Length: 332
Figure 1 (tube, rainbow, N blue to C red):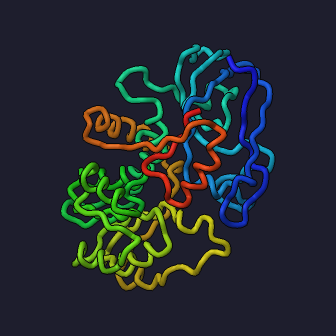
Figure 2: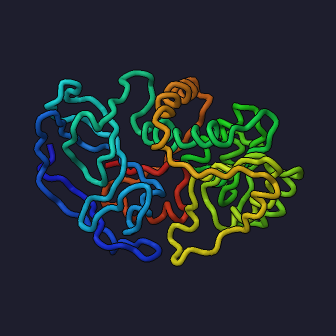
């Protein structure tokens, strides 16, 4: 067993793009689990765009990370020692335990992972975890696509967008992805089965006109910025927009002006932002439905892995710039 707990702390708050100077790697003694707690060895850490917001000292749907505290994040971990009757050494769990190699956690804050089914534990940070559940909520509860409708999703090769598009395809939609670069676009069409994928680095407006000549019925928004500006005018009347995130603006200070939303009235559009934690019932539903699809091989997913906790800051900075390809995790 390791003799220390390595942690990455938030050292300073960035005013724009985060850099290595905003993080600090420290070593501390292993935590001692108390009554009802377990000692965890973190195995895989999830890196997600929402973490950028936690670095700001600003009001949001969740508290920011305090300076000098461990960066927030979900992980899958192995139980090393247990003072809780529901867990035993060797069990694998998922929980929000942060950017560190070890932690002590109360059993009630953890989710035990299935020991059968052939699904690797890291899948519960991606396709069967928060990103996959986010896609399920955005598509089925907000977008509500009908067979034959045109469904467009940005960041289509990413952890959320790739699942959202596959769900829409299973529901009978014509699915158009938007991604950055030919390699990602090929993956989206050839591996994920989307009907088309458009490179946002080109003339996206013209590409959308060609791919969606009659307009867009449902848009799953992950990016914002120039992609959003190209999509919004091409929405059809009574279209729906599931507003998941705007990663293109997370490092921009001050924030740029938004799009002209007059079309919301003229076209009777429905635009709804959402946070997956507000939909607790969806986690159970998605575990059942998405888990079956993963097990049978009809839902495809991809991971981008960094190795070593010390490399988490660099990987996270790259995530915000679109350098990852698939769900980004760190092997701890």
